[in-house]
View 1 (cartoon, rainbow, N blue to C red):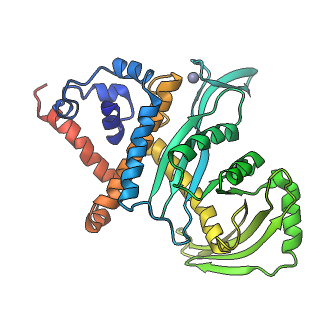
View 2 (cartoon, protein in one colour):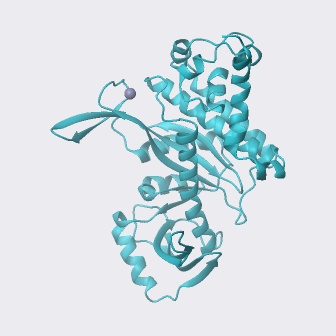
View 3 (spheres, rainbow, N blue to C red):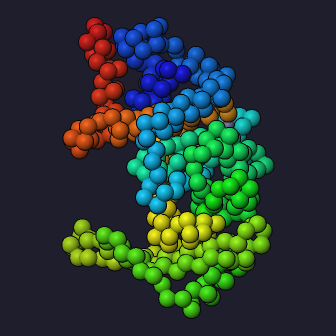
Length: 366
Ligand SMILES: [Zn+2]
């Protein structure tokens, strides 16, 4: 596991690239022994105890919590954000954990893929990827998310105040889970909840919007609670609509350009606990976190790479990559001095780590 973590920290992206560094003196210092072969690492990953990997993630969370690094944002609420991510898709090899879908190309072909649901915490200035759960055959993303939440509420009972997701999570199972566990829920509201949207829009017509101005965005917001048009949810819900005009200067001609977007969210959060502005900020933060979290994991940390096509190994590599991203972001944001943070990018610091691995190789005779 230590070898894989070093691979993730250095963003090497493959076990073969890791194997090529075997002669580096770094490994004896880090592992106390020689680096195992790529094949051995892949084989061992298939049998790794997932609870042990998750306990390691929990340890990082506890350390950050104790160090007061996980303070909530100004509105006082920490959201746990759920989102699905596809690890890879192929027409060729498949394993017992593969999901299947039929793709119409020049005929019908079966495509095999793996997908996980991940849960992240949106704290004040830090986001933390807590855990992940594979979507199994015959179930949808929300079912896997609920299994993940059942574990998260045991492992991190007080870490979050509400659970949040995209339009897929405007689902009664998700909302009722929150209500049953003393948490709040929030999701993007889209066409598939037509009755609720129609009901809300009808009432919003009679209500003047409130304006919220930020640096380059003007938001006109409508916000009402007490909707019972979604009877499968065990409590009345609140609907917020935000029509946003964002001004940006176009690079091409230097002219100011305004772009309008329309957002709707549904939540169990009462106005008493979260103002309109707080809900809108949380709605947009979810989007940022999903994008940043997954983009970084995939583009910088190669989390989509199939190191070993086996269900446990794939989850182990994903969880370890999440863990390394957490540790690295925490180190960068909390340990580096402000002057260093201003001067150095995260990528630069990652390359300094990589240098530790490669420098002994460059010095060694070939
Ligand atoms: Zn598979």
